[in-house]
Amino acid sequence: MCPVDPFADVLTANAEYAKTFVDDGRPGVAGVGLAVITCMDSRISPLEMLGLGKGDAKILRNAGARVTDDTLRTLVLAHYLLGVQRVLLLAHTDCGMTKNTDTDVHAKVLAQGVDSRSIDFRTIADQRATLVHDVQRIRSWPFLPPAMPVAGGIYDVRTGAIEMVVAADATAEALPGA
Image (tube, rainbow, N blue to C red; front, side):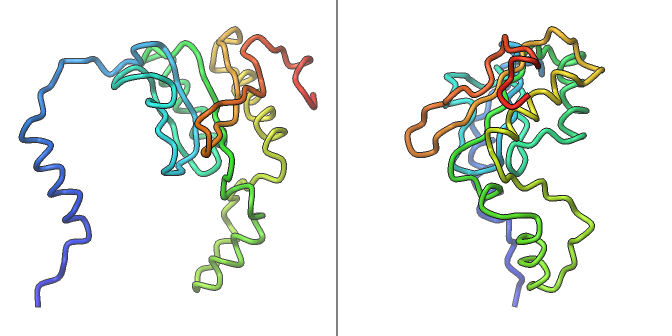
């Protein structure tokens, strides 16, 4: 019996896509100077929800739309090498990272035989406070321009609307909870 390729569906789809693909010569820079940090949730289509097209923005995704050290490293590269001049941090409603604690996640993983206690999953107890904190983390990162516009909002997965929580022109002293 021949093993089934677990990627056969997507590779077959790619083969069809490649048949009609035309390289438009677009450079790898952010066409509108935007980086979007959002969650890995598959209900989120960052380009479509912001009225953008291919090549317009750099999209960074992780569980909970958290600003991690790797996110900051990527933003430095995006700014200095790829034309990013502004950053939009977008959390979302109904996020799994708001429904569990790190302890919950560790227990669920351990129930499947893996001890994950060395991992900080960065779950979210208060989504708005976390968003404010993470926006400020970007704003205060010494390797990014201090005047770079950074804003934060929450995307509603049921309505498609974004509620802005931290405006781009807010200063650290004016941020909620600061």
